Amino acid sequence: MGKNKKDEKKKKNKNGKNGHDGNGNELINRLNCALSFEYAATIQYLQQQCAVKGQERQQFAPFFAASSSEAHLHAQNLGNKIAALGGVPTIEPAEIRQGATLAEMLRHDLDMERKALAAYVKAWESAQGNHPLVFWLEEIISEEQLHVDELEKLNSAYS
Ligand SMILES: [Fe+2]
Image 1: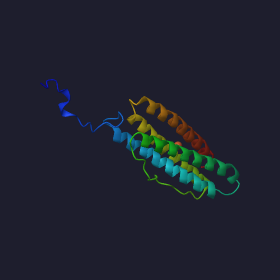
Image 2: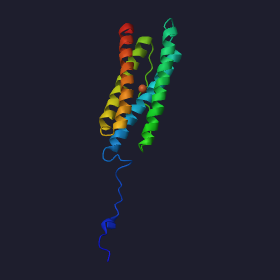
Image 3: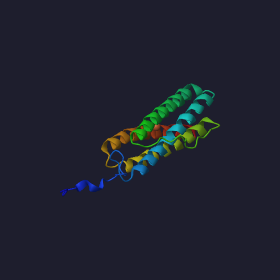
């Protein structure tokens, strides 16, 4: 007498990877958007570190080198997070720009940092409800905001 067969229909439960149901793809896409900016920043700063010339090289080569390393580290952390969430980290960098002068380089960097910040904020919006991820993103966002602040100051002196 099989009466109480509640589980006669074994649900496949296709949606919901690791508890992220619904907007999982939007979140991954937005995280990948931020990742593409980190890749691009890694290369853009690296090229600038090599290319910056003249008197300002002494000050700016270390700044560009440190910025490239930081973007690289952010890319690693973010790529690992995307994979941990069940996504596939992108291999596509965002647009990388080459400046002919220091002023142009700094303008490109400010533009890049603003776009990266905006991409992280978008990801943060999609992460609502996942508190650990929200906190993780907030830490990064506050660091990205500092980069924007710094580059705004540098741009005001060199533009
Ligand atoms: Fe970053």
